[in-house]
Length: 175
Image (cartoon, rainbow, N blue to C red; front, side, top):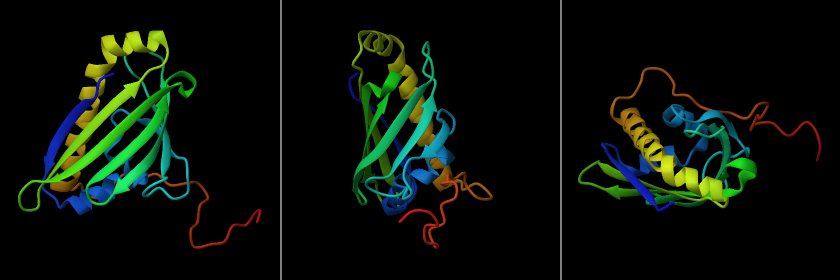
């Protein structure tokens, strides 16, 4: 699929937005409208090498497991994520967040996504249905991110943790 770009202007410093985007444990706070069963794949959910898995349900298709890894984190300008999706993870996905300063304490967040389906049927279905669906979901994701910074909700935001992981203690099993 050709690259798809959506953007939002957020009234917050780009360093704060970058720190929020690069922390995969905070993603359910602004992506839970279309990503389900969100799980961290590594103990450190922040920065380069952080990874997560989740489920999406595109139109006219069975649910997909998506595996996403942060490949590049250039503070405070850019976050690049690579992933695999579809049946048996046979297709590739790339998402790039560019954070561009817009005046005083405002940031333009541009999210560019493209996919590389490998199977003929995946290419056909993606060309017919997935582009518009993905554009709507990505735009909604950025609107929710803007709402978190401009109208902070009361209470704590949704966050994912690794079960049994206690960073202040040594491992109990193994070396």
